[in-house]
Image 1 (tube, each protein chain N blue to C red):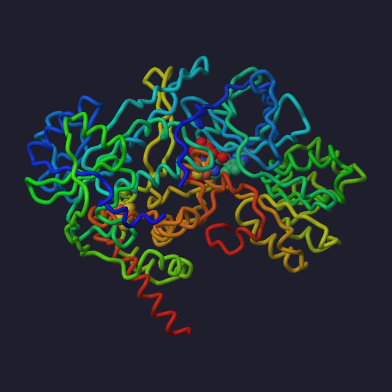
Image 2 (cartoon, helix red, strand yellow):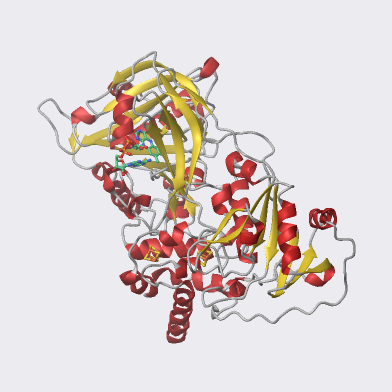
Length: 353
Length: 280
Ligand SMILES: Cc1cc2nc3c(=O)[nH]c(=O)nc-3n(C[C@H](O)[C@H](O)[C@H](O)COP(=O)(O)OP(=O)(O)OC[C@H]3O[C@@H](n4cnc5c(N)ncnc54)[C@H](O)[C@@H]3O)c2cc1C
Ligand code: SF4
Ligand code: SF4
Ligand code: FES
């Protein structure tokens, strides 16, 4: 299966103006809770529940946090216990209908990758239950200086996972594609009777940021790069703050902690997002730490994106959203790091061939 | 890609509240617990596997099962006091309750070891998971060849399971060697690190399995000692310890390069971890 081009041409489509698209967003609220991008700061955006459809932002570069926050919340209660009698209850997991409106293709791919990790081996009920009954409506974006999803096989118009995909032609012109039955039913219920089909010409969208190699060639780099100089060079600037993990759609590592009330009678066992870039992450008894150096942790993070899980998943676990680059306080840029690895690889191979 | 959405409600993180039926100190820092699962159900573990032990309000930690699965109706743990949780667990007595999840991980492949000589090398608290294997072999003694046990501790007062050590020493069908780093006035045995026990051994190299568990530094030296005996690497098994938060391959804490200690281990064949910088 090639995720690259699921051609939009095969889908029924309809053209809506801005007002109609906002109305459609309002209509979706009758079907479940609707989440969509909202403006947060001057230049930042965030997925929030839609209250007023006029506040939804259609054209945005990326949200600060990806969709994982809805399926694996930053802090999640696993158990609620009473200490004295050793009893506990499992919290209810909310699996009511949710519609995610205005999702970019790479963020959808991030969700599909989390589905993979939480359903393989011992499937995890908490994630999978919360993930049930979710419908995704995709939207196109104009790649900025940080996006490089094209280099990891995810086009702007990749529709995998979406029930509906919206191509933004201009501010008042949206082409809405029904990608599956759910999507088509939603559009029909909203009142769309006539769909168009046949040729559709997509905008040309160029990624400004690009990996030097196609993702298919990256395993060749990650097979060899374990002792490259790049790791140490990068980590000279890295602060080890863990921001890159928190904003990443495919980072899901967590810590588990018990919290108790002031009377020490009741409490809850919670899990929270954790970061493999933090020093304590891999520390064991007696303070021994098998990744105590920053370069080892950077290397571990990138191997999780391009090698370890990729070896059995088949595609990079990095979806090219550019968040880790944009939100890194030390300006460490994922594309630059990978391209530097490629460069070092080429230099070394030349020397040793 | 096959995504299994929630079909059955199996909560990975829900412990079973179990009863401590016996608790006693083995040393100043190690306490032994006999535990009964609800209804006296068997844990059905394999030697080398671990459980997640929890106390509400304090937390959860991976602890090796130290009893053999041949014993039914209960299982045993030996817990060293090192921090918050283990300190609280040390306060528990018979009749108290404790949460258990598991068994988890990959243990020793006792079926594949059948017919072979078994060389056990345990350093310090490393003897804990090995006791499960040793007792399993003792209970199925005819299925295995020689049973050689090397045990090293810092001092005589840190030796665990002393009644059993005596039994191992006395049995004709067990070759038991023990050493301590520092002796005391009553100690008459070997003094020195555990690796000093290896050179004198006469082994049928091709037909011997080595099972090693100990602190991280011990592995390096034991491996070197085995190497100089030309012990085949493919016959070496070891159990590794990492920080664990979930025990089921999700939280990421136990990862050694591409391996999850909680799922791919804690018992590894040496060849699986040999080239991995983060392993030993
Ligand atoms: C597979 C496996 C089997 C184990 N079997 C046993 C056993 O049979 N008996 C036993 O006494 N101990 C065993 N341990 C170690 C035990 O899990 C830790 O000692 C325990 O988690 C410490 O918890 P704490 O809250 O008391 O200490 P903390 O207050 O959490 O920490 C004290 C020290 O232990 C380190 N630490 C914290 N969590 C772990 C962890 N999960 N693993 C290793 N170090 C950690 C900390 O970095 C710190 O240095 C095993 C560990 C693993 C991974
Ligand atoms: S966000 Fe940047 S500085 Fe912080 S840990 Fe990640 S790479 Fe290092
Ligand atoms: S590694 Fe960086 S670019 Fe890749 S998916 Fe994670 S946050 Fe996005
Ligand atoms: S302990 Fe969580 S992944 Fe192994």
